[in-house]
Image (tube, rainbow, N blue to C red; front, side, top):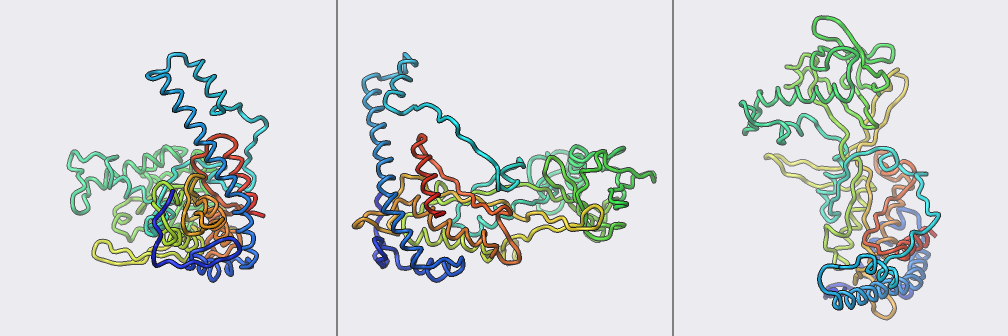
Length: 426
């Protein structure tokens, strides 16, 4: 796809590539020194990779055109609904649109983080050009169950439980009752209900729950108690776990909500969006070097832990950045339980189809954008692989980079993506 040139842009020639000068400066002065990659070696390798793989990319797109032409010809000759599905399938196999399933293909979860290998939970998709959206999505790993119930239609507004402009105690009581039901479903007590709790404490590595009437109980499954914050006799937080997902029962008898709660519970914070796709493709339009540079800067900043955004809300302003990891004592009070504070971040690269004028090759042709994304975003991802995130922030704890590669037709295009990633790694 052709894009209009930015008349203000300038280019720097490096080997066989003509690179937008601002993009090159960003890579040369910020990214590559940070990840300790030699600038000259990077551009030499990048040029060689483009020379080798851009023609392969073009050949794959030519094959798409051939298939489309064959399909157009057939459907013009056979207008209307398909009458003979078996014959049509034979036609698709003959032209190579349908191919046999490759044999011996395997996928493993070696070095894959739990959010992808073991846990099941929501995934968000967010445009990477918008720093505020990206930060919000990354931080959506943990959220207030009370706020979610109060602000949505999960709790009906009848019987005086309308949301209203301020806090409605009737609605608040329904929210708390519903949240206790969630605890009873996910982490039931050996006897009684969380709704009857008057206090939580830790004794001998186990959770003890005091109930109305004076008796005490524990969890039906003691293994669902995962940790706590504060003193064991009067914890400020109880960490529970169900099906690999965590619930944090926050206890604060000085807060407005906790002061009215028999057990002092002020909120229940639940693990929600386990992963987020930061999107370079469908949800944005990055048509030139300026757009790509903003996207790459945001990816760089979020992995460094330095990306922030000024937010103005409710008459006040504050700076939004990435949430820290969550830290608890283990049930025995002997060691630390550290939970990831943010969604596991994936990055969706552009597919094989698009080109971009940020870099020209082969005498003025626009670079295949998916090739540029693969090289640049992986170079930036080395920030995380090398553990350079601020305040100990890591995206992957297993040393992986998660790139989503969209819109591939057939095993040849998938094999090309694999070849591309292998060359980037080399």
